[in-house]
View (cartoon, rainbow, N blue to C red):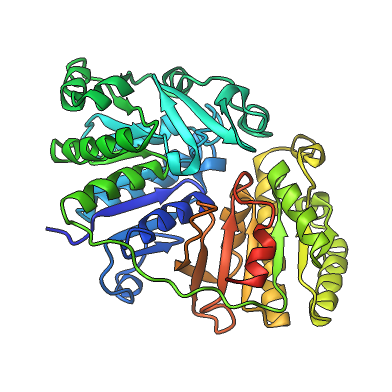
Length: 440
């Protein structure tokens, strides 16, 4: 049998590090690669129980998925892990034309013998809940149905206008999606409910998760479905939280490891392409705590205005040289989002790549030991400009789940061992950047 418990593909980088964090907190040795790893690179990590690939499919088209996902899914299938997971954001935001979860589900199902695909999205650790097939998510202490969420209902690329995830997926795939809702999970009738759902020969089965009890039952059911042939799973990091509960129950995993706290750093650099109000608050809090906030017009990155980018880079390096931390940002909240004006996904990708090149320069020329990239789509494209080929957990942050500090692995000495965090737009408390500078 394969020693691997799990292989996963994250549809963006911050979602991938979210999975790595969920596993690390439970002592599951994990490495995250930017591409399908060579045997030589994989062999550098002893004792792995989980291997992931950080992708970009959340911001890509179905045609891109058709060309790029099947080879990855075939590699995942060949590893023989108990579960192969296509990881999506816990807000499930997607559309028929961008980040189509339905299309990814179809492609994965075809590789894994057309078996029904379990779907688990709820993750109470992230304050994401599914009940009767509808998704709810927290924002600033209050839980909203996802189509009424103050941020996700207005997402600039993939606004969520439907809370019923089966109806949401119906716009992206013709596969039937069955539902196993919470009551049978809570009453001990989960297996019977799954079996009943499978009698209709659906393409996928959505399993509710709204608390710890339903999560634990979902983990048990995922493993049972895997033994029946449904090894390919779609969902949030709630998949890992659910599986880990059952792996711990039967002794497959032993428990949580110890992580050394972060030492304080005099200065760090943050680059942000996020338009989220959460990130806006974090930038303003950091500025109040001594960071220098530097605006960078996203048009300069999308349009190749090298002189404007050079001015920002020079300012940032001067401030870093004086001992200050910096946040270079392309937006301060949703009011600054100009994605439509810039002309679509490729412009957003260019912004992410440009911020990655800027961060690489700041790390290299200022000799930084810790850095941050904010924005889910931004992070996916930025990391590929840093010369990093793998990440491992450095320090999970349980009170702000989904935003761990990672250790970079690179062939470039200035980047190998770099402490780096990738933060999705909705993730983290107001002091997130300050905390990463000050350590603890």
